[in-house]
Image 1: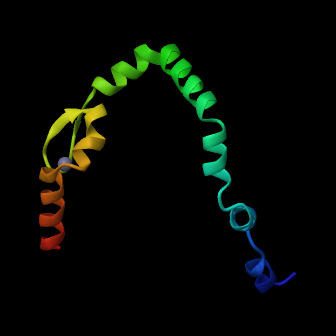
Image 2: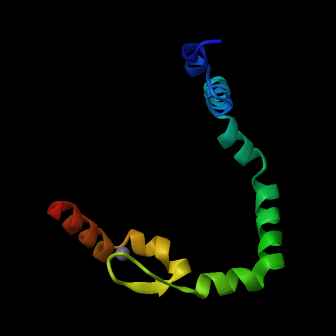
Length: 98
Ligand SMILES: [Zn+2]
């Protein structure tokens, strides 16, 4: 076996990615259909998970996070902060300088 034939061979990861892309192309709406078919089940599962791990989740969400824009907030507010005008202004300002 030569070096070129080794290089031409797809790694197991690339092979899996190929299968995945093919599968996705053949089943374009699979996930959205699955979600609407299992909506009730997902809600129950998520609620049960929350009840079971409530203590840990609440502690985790109460932890402070400091954003790159300098604002400190609770972790559960961070996704909302990312959409805030203050944060967006900071990002725009930063991109303008680069
Ligand atoms: Zn920010």
